[in-house]
Length: 486
Image (cartoon, rainbow, N blue to C red):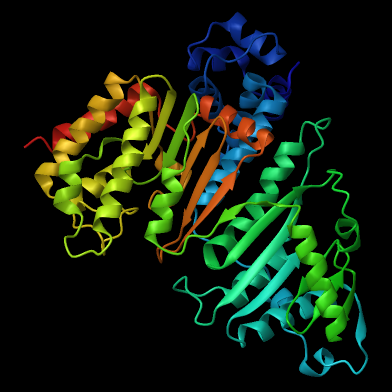
């Protein structure tokens, strides 16, 4: 028996289900149903599993468990759970920031405890370490143009402290705080879940990247022999201009240093470590930086573009840009030339690349209603007029058909279909544009081979629960086109 048949059999026994009657209800011959129960045959589809659940009067939770067992036997346990991890990562990319940890972890350190008479103070227990961690960020926020240096694996509680203290409701801190954070990725190729752990590490940091504008990440591989002993000396630390906090990875023990000679030494050690690391984030100061970053993108033999809004980059032309890029802009010629360069580069690869475009129906309809593209800021672009919206949608569908592009439309159940974040994945690069409701943007560039393989496998085997089929997606696009063909 497989895990699906074991789950099904236990339900049949518990609920005293008549297998023959269930087979009749599901329109399956009796022998086939008995084979499914014994595990010598699989259900033909998820719809068939849903019929079984309906007949057995399962709760939504029970149906979900049975369906998951079916998906596991369809793809294999390893592939299923790896793809499930990627799906969770994508939802984290496109969701609004999740709730914060309990407030007990965000309580700042008592002022009297923060001014030790001695050069260093011993901290015992998780509560003291987290309180001291919180105090350092509260203190730095009061000082303009401050820096914080972090060397630690991401932890939900510490990440929540950072985005609570340093983030701002409108995405822009009133006082400039620059944060540099070094962390490790796992390079153990023996363990099959190594890449899963790596993507979970990055996922933990996503809410902070959406909330804190000047948050820069650097990574190295945990088992990489760098020849630099500083990696071993400074496993977990937070360093400011005044303090250096050392602590254990489990947050149970710490040392708070105040002597300036010690703090300076820690800063120097941090910079030595950073020199052996790989940048994960790219600083985006303004729209010109964003365009330049996209112009440096190199398409591989396969690429996937995943975004909720309607991405028209592939079919932008000079006439459209001339008409809708605002005339009074000082950088107008740069915007036009950069967008045309990106569009031409993308079109060159559509003839030879295995391309997949993943968008949301809501994103298309929002564009057709308003003429606004979320990734084209309104201070630089006028809304596209209705007649041009229709022409662009026609060109979009023509481009998909002529270049044999795979179009997948995201189902509403996936999550926040209003998100302005987007992801580009090809054979050599993962480019993630995180954009929150305020419009603040952060770009993550990932070149790790394991993560590239993980995401490419997911997009080439897109789960039905996330996206419509190619045929259904094209029908949906055609229906929208017909609605506006007036």
